[in-house]
Image 1 (cartoon, rainbow, N blue to C red):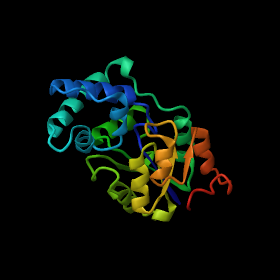
Image 2 (tube, helix red, strand yellow):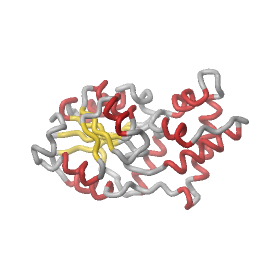
Image 3 (tube, rainbow, N blue to C red):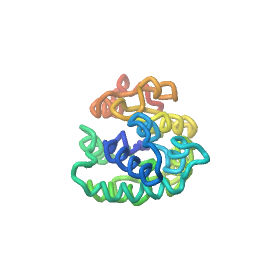
Length: 225
């Protein structure tokens, strides 16, 4: 049995426009200059306090920015122009993996529990994930706690666990937990940075990602199983 754990923002879902807009509102409410788009996306994957700490420093209004961001996010997500689409091929990939009896699926994300529940409900994924870890359940990535909890809940060992994500935080978390780290090239951190953080492989498409779990020894050679 293999445990395949997915990050959400930048891996399953393209939420960049909503994230950047909500950060802009939060910074404006506190009279601060909003970070550049690149800076905004560089902290995607971290829990909110850690993300804002990186953007404004330890002395900044971290708690206030976090609360402003959550309010803005929940308002802006109702605007159709801030749709959060799934990345191409990810729906089909999850459907195939869910149907297999040798795989369990998981989520590990910097989103709050409410956001995870909303994602699952929106896409009709109820019962698809054996474990879901959120910012409300564990310390922020790259701390390994989310993955360690996911493995404990499913009873699957680190050498049969794969973390799939688009940020260095995902890759470092996987390595810290003893799991395999697989990066996706369509997210918010550069491919070179993913390899630098410990990715064993970085895939370009959902089809390439699915090939890693196809049972083909050559396709799956980079995954420790």
